[in-house]
Length: 282
Image 1 (cartoon, rainbow, N blue to C red):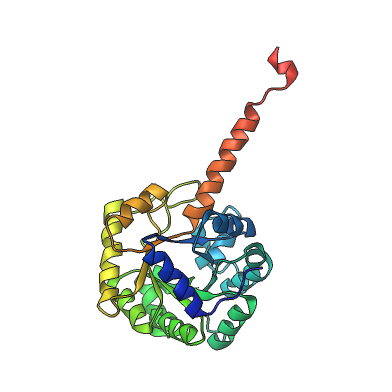
Image 2 (image 1 turned 180 degrees about the vertical axis):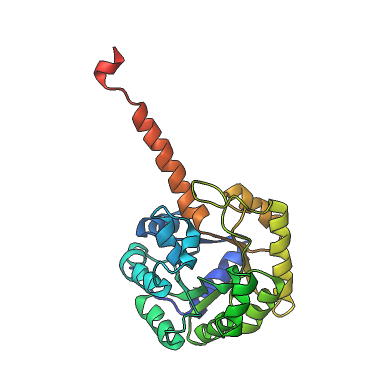
């Protein structure tokens, strides 16, 4: 079972990684095995999203934004029964839907801590929604500002805080809210059997990441930042983007568990299929 952390302890661990000149690697986990392997591989944090449940059951990650299940209930159950029992010493972060009008946020944060999570990130987030529907959500108090308010409350409750942001304005808002780690998000991860086919190019993604980092710096020049999503799908992609931005590291979800699992299972199945029965060898 994962050890329990206070925000200050996670901050100290993250600072040590940065001081050593190493990238901060945060791995999404939709199964206990994914979490266990990410920890063995050296991940610094693990994040549990409701989308991980869909992703590792063969569905597109974006299904986590649709009403196929209660996002907060899924993440609490995944942490309690699947992820936290499978890890040892790594801090585990809960993706919470902060705009859920049927839940008391302070009570939800207490549940998150009771399960054993060390922190929270805003997922699912209205930041991924645009157009008239987004304006309607904002107009009735179910917008990004509520997610920022939840980040402030989570930090005050002793939870480490991460936030996805999608624009420079989002970045400034979350920096003002006091988020510990900012995650510029550049779209649904590309590649594999259920990845995006509409991803940005790597240079455009790097430019967007850097613009959000610089916006956050206007408020807090010490903020920790990680890139995520879109075309940033392989270790080589991450190296390219980290070399062209001031991001301290990377958050991988599909890229850390779905894509490697797809590749490995497809390849090993083909290898097993290549084995020949004795009679067929004649």
